[in-house]
Amino acid sequence: MPSTPTVPEWPLAHVLVVDDEAGMRNFLEKTLASRCAGVRSAPDAEAGDALMRKHRFDLLVLDITLPGKSGIAWLRELRGRGYGGEVILITAFADLDTAIEALRAGASDFILKPFRVTQILNAVRRGLERARLQRANWVLERALRQRTPAADGLVGGSAAIEGLRTALQRVAAVNSTVLLAGESGTGKELAALAIHRQSARGGGPFVPVNCATMSPEHIEQELFGHAQGRDGLFVYAQGGTLFLDEIGGLPLPLQATLLRVLEDHLIRPVGSEQQIPVDVRIVAATNRRLADEVAAERFRADLYYRLQVVEINLPPLRAHKEDIPDLVAHFIATLAPQLGVPPMQVSPDELAYLAQYEWPGNVRELRNLIERSLILGALNVSALYQGLPRMRSAARAAAEHPTALHALEKQHILAVLDSVGGDKTHAAQLLGVSRRTLERRCAEWGLNADGARTARLT
Image (cartoon, rainbow, N blue to C red; front, side, top):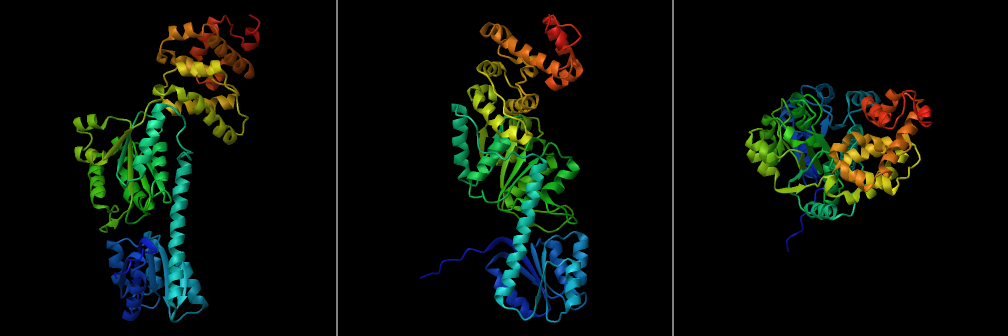
């Protein structure tokens, strides 16, 4: 009866063993081969260096006493060149001074020969766990810098959102490349995160990158890493999901490189000959019509078809306005504690006002409005006044609520003017409108230039 193959303990890890004793190299290779993605060995620093330049290794098991260049001297060179992987130094002859020198050179562990199998396995386990935690910490810090949403899920119960929720659940169950299409602010990163968390990769990293905000000179190094620098985002996303936002902004030469990565699952760091195998799911997003970009020869047709294995369109907010009350409540509940302010109440008339707006900035615009309003202490309806041409119909809005909407706006503007002593420039900044718009509204209400206190008497 055939034996059941064991699952490797470290299925993504690549290890290099450098030792001048053939028996030790053979022992370590056999011990680690079934537990790692790959193990290579070399008899000295020169041969090890040649392997390091062609392949990427997560961990190095290095003998101190080598013919020619010593293990410690080579380790110093590697650290100086930017190698950031874990290094376990092994030796048959050591004292306290040697151990201190090894740690100063950049070793992460130190083992005396002869050692038991459990000793080396525990050292490798500790090293790879440290490497995993360092990658996770880097991804988390990057996400915090970019304010990646720690989303609890999609908000709303409209038919549009329920359909989106079902589509995301279906694609999460497979490992195919996904293309998310939709206007800016519709929540494409939130949808990508939902796919990741519901997938088999949910325990791995989720690494977002905006292709449109990086310069062409830096994006290649950011994605694929550099021979003399840190690893790229593909390596940091190993075992997880890489979210390529605004994929339409990727330069044409890099589009060809990305296509090869999607087909071969190999990346090549800038300035390096080594090819690194990657196990990463790609979720891409765009607010452009990529078919039009292909027709204009700004986007490769072959990459478009490769990304479009599954395409999901995210609805604009104007297509599911019935979700606005749920979204408002959600943003108040999440943003108020972050800002350190009390939650605010939003009346039915104010919600009706929000439902008349067309929301060109979609859910992101609504979120920003709620954040500004929480800071001011009341719903900042006047910030939407300059968007009245984007309403379904200004005349229809006035007919539906002939006095309530104007009263809401006037009440809010007067409160803000009062809080700044009638300073219209400051009030306009707080309200998110131009001073000219504010002065026009005040003139319509018969308010003079002395500010809100005098205006209340007119």
